[in-house]
Length: 297
Ligand code: GDP
Image (cartoon, rainbow, N blue to C red; front, side, top):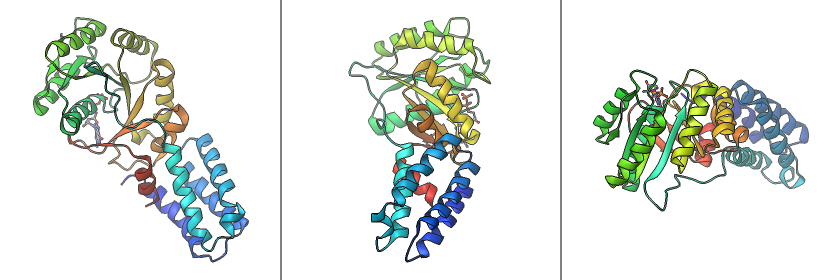
């Protein structure tokens, strides 16, 4: 289960405090030492942990808190608030274009779940927002990528635009958007190529697709199982492409929490959706407050 270790350790750290009628600065310090270790062990970025601990400590040792009738409860609330804040900010949902189609560019490293997520999101928007989505197969490098998207389209009954693998991804993306306009499709997902690691060729091509298609959203798909490495990947993609949001996948696995808690602070960009399974309806909007509650257990 996701966050299992982190939840247990945070709960342990806070239970001690909850039991006390009076809380001293030393008690807070002791608790924060444990919180810090719990976060580091969950693979949260070092600097993120440091800032988080500082913020919570400063608020928690304030006299209004320690002299409160129920200081333990209040400190737990501060931890909850700061966790929410750490993952929060930024606009919720998708920025739809006032002039359809809304173009959503999907980027990410190979295996992160980019293609699956494109299908899941297209389906989600159709169900929730009554959109008429289309998907564009612009990954011409991985042999099975086009076919994978087509199969996904068939499963979901969502059209897929493809021009094979002998045309440049930029042209495919442009023609795909044109086709969407002609067919009255109001959201276009562009499935771009992934690589095993970030390289200049990949980034240059993604920049070209961005310039040619002027997407309303650029969603980076990252695998939650990769911990703070996911945050590093997000930082690189953001520096090159100025992404608009992150989709965190595989939250149904036993991820420790590093990605969920680091991404926003490291990149300044919000997590917008989370993937929670292989099934095509296993996608949810991301709410920082709910995630904080889930992590605290
Ligand atoms: P891409 O290379 O980034 O396009 O990745 P794919 O979309 O092909 O996904 C790689 C694998 O991850 C596939 O087996 C997907 O079913 C799986 N996957 C994607 N999202 C999730 C998720 O949220 N949870 C789980 N458990 N598996 C996922």
